[in-house]
Image (cartoon, rainbow, N blue to C red; front, side, top):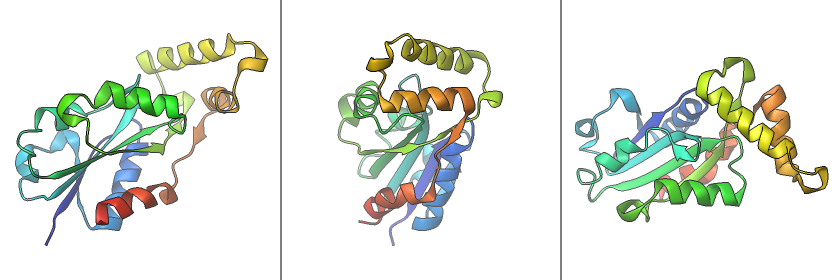
Length: 175
């Protein structure tokens, strides 16, 4: 029997919700990245890793990068969670930042997350302020629909986490 594990790194909870649903749908063992070691995954055939996108990087992806040799022969799949992941440029940037050299053939699925302004602080708050300023600094005619939606989410918050979004990923895992 094939054994699957879902390992996640979640900062505000969206990635954790997706990871729980994916594990439930696939019968996989669920691990928080901080509580998991490569030894926990030695009997797995498939490792699904999920992390939030933060400044283009996927939180916790170093877990896969540093254990790549130990995971040789295993199928690795990544899902990345963020507010603006439907934008193909953002997806491409995320892939370029996170999937270099030996990781370039690892499939990555993008799932929309959530943003709750009152919960955000420190660097995350500054980063979102910079994104907001960058978009708001454009002429109105140059701001895309996606950027308008992102501005609204930054100002008011948004929750795009939806169990239906995992369907394609779950089908891929079960193949």
